[in-house]
Length: 304
Image (cartoon, rainbow, N blue to C red; front, side, top):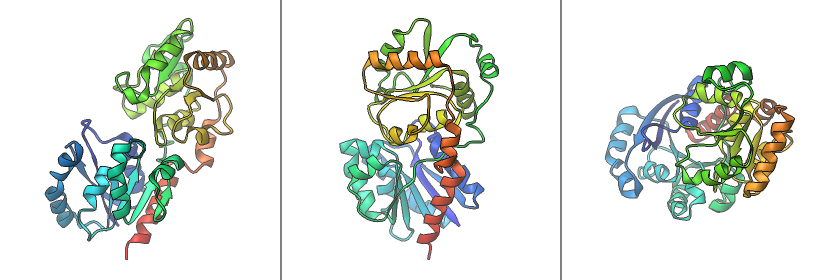
């Protein structure tokens, strides 16, 4: 089976959760090729229409898998190849983006949502599945904390808290995270920026806690990857975090309040016990291989 993956490359690279999923699909026997979009907005995407049609003629895919709503709209401007569109959160949470996503939902042969909240917001009634992006548990796994700290040159006794993204990403609400951690003596907030996938996994094993304060999310990969590394998580109730952390000890869901976040961070720093999040990822079917099989089943159902 041949699948053409249509996705953005506006940031200079394809989002890691997309490349991880494609790699898992390839391991499952699906032949995948990328068609990347570097334009912005609906006009920027439409400039890719003719190149996309040319790519379809050359590659002859059985399925087109578009990631995000605008990619779904573009992919559906041809009607010969069935389109599966995955909606990752920002394309549903943002009302302006949601308008275009609803067009993609109506045209796509099948729709995948990464969280139940996004399903509810979208108003979708048929041809859809709830499938959060999976985690590569060969990369994101428990490791020796002291060894990982040594790799980054961290002090063995320093209180380290990893933020869920770059400090200039306003959707991640870095101001709240900075304010919260500033209330904890001798604690340092680390920015998640400029690391490759292996380094991110090592970083999650090196720190004491992973912190998410985002305004909106779909199914945050950051939380799933932290769990796979058995790292404690403190997060606001965003996306599907409540479901992800359900039943996992030494993780907390908090209000968007700096004092409350600080108190919970402090509690977990004192406890200093890592959760069995890796088990939760496995039992929830969120390992990359499990997710790939679910998506492959959808592909097979659409190929006549």
